[in-house]
Image (cartoon, rainbow, N blue to C red; front, top):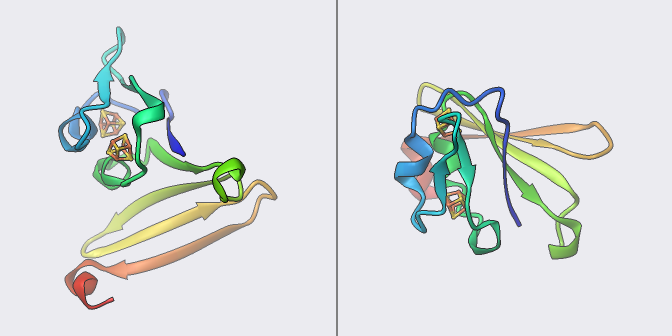
Length: 104
Ligand code: SF4
Ligand code: SF4
């Protein structure tokens, strides 16, 4: 599993580069984020949550037991919405109150 970075949505703010625990992300020649070593990504989703523009999605590959969907995060105050887009066009959203995150 790895991430997908939508280049047209990235503004090069660099937040995702700063939070990746494996330092797997870098800025490309256009100043936008890209992943250098996709095989080393352990899908922690830190970069997904850090991107205020929703430019990063976590890909759940069928070969790894996923369903080929994309997981994006959207913040609304203290609420974090996880939006799952499946290949059949359906979407599901799971909303988590970050203030209660340790109680789940
Ligand atoms: S956090 Fe989002 S907008 Fe900022 S550099 Fe990363 S992908 Fe681009
Ligand atoms: S999901 Fe985690 S390990 Fe993978 S690129 Fe993003 S921050 Fe790095």
